[in-house]
Length: 322
Image 1: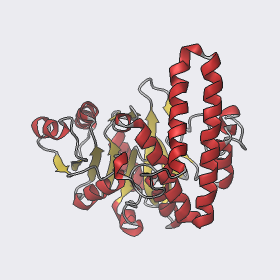
Image 2: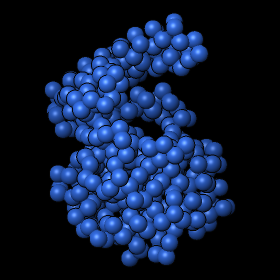
Image 3: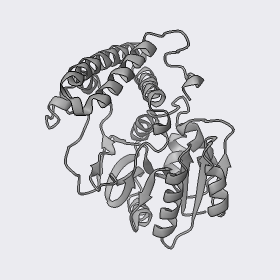
């Protein structure tokens, strides 16, 4: 069996994907590994780039954009590693990243998912760990209380801390930009839920691992750089709405119809408040006027979708969004 399978789902992110693959080969250590790139029907030449520049990579080309969860599941089914890394195409890796994670997983067999420290390109910390959505922290998010008082243990309760965690520790959620998964735990918990097209599958998977008794652990001794938004920047509004749809799916799955109604109301409140804040700042923050105009337009379009205007389907994947 291969030690490690590195699975990368990519959609219209050619330069980021090239950088990611180069980084793997520059930082990998002496163990058996394989790389699988799952291309979600890119139109920017990504598949040809992989074929020409990285012929040793196992390239799988989908005939349409299947989304994050389904594409990753295709890679998982084709992989052979005892550990699997699910990696975004806009990630690069610091030295010994994979090796340190594998050693730690071998030393701690109770861990199902491990996530490294993730930095922004400017070397500031990117919080890739957080808590499960709850009725309270969702209310705080909707009312912007977490923004007004981010250090409060009450209002900022969806975050563990605004400060770096310096030692390995269990967390509730590791965001899906970079996971290392144990094969035996995966066999126990199952594949990603393909109901989630984009976003939300990370919260769902971490919850399923925790319910099955597997540890979800943040591991700051391994470091990766996340450029963020390589694919989602191609369609920011569509992906923003897709994030809302995924949130509704999660709440319906774990809290039933009452949970779905709750998050629906909270989302409307959230968007209305952002429209109000954006309108205020457009009138006084001249240097950032375009930013707040974009926020107003995005929230307005989201509310139209929430009100289920013709052509929009709440909680059902609308292919026109992709």
